[in-house]
Length: 252
Image (tube, rainbow, N blue to C red):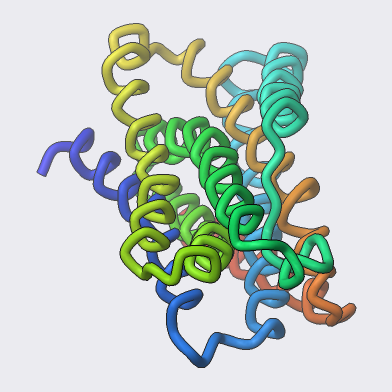
């Protein structure tokens, strides 16, 4: 299997992890909030560990300190702009969703699906590019993205299922929001690969670090704390950072 196909496969699997979240929203007994609180903190630890222990040092080596930091903040700023213009929320971030009418619930689910899809597009680009550069790094990023996509799938399927009573519709929209990640990978393969060189690589790696740090501090850490378990996100974060550090040590 070629490196491009491997990178596309990893990105697709990460994106379609929303399907797992969708299924959790459709079964009577859901996984407890303690699990989500820990896993989101864990994912934040992995993402920040990858960003500052692997991506940024590689970027500095290729394009220097100044340019790598400029592109780090460019990636961070891009995600901030997307989040500001098209925000999306997880289930539990706002109280009172159960009191909404079916029409409002349906609209909520569809807008969350749209927001998640738009957010997933640059995440797909980041996962694909990282996997193309280093398959082991790509696997680590894909796993982190996949874990954080599970509650996103839940956020889409739950209101749509409650509003329509249709498992098919809830599942379809969750899956559609996840497909945006391989779509981002395909765009990267079509337009960025012809221009790949060490300079471009360094700048892209720094931008990917900015994207992942933004996701961690704007989404994962706040949402992990919103479940009401103050220490679980911290324990998850420490575990994620530790595992990432150990894995990078073993790779080197």
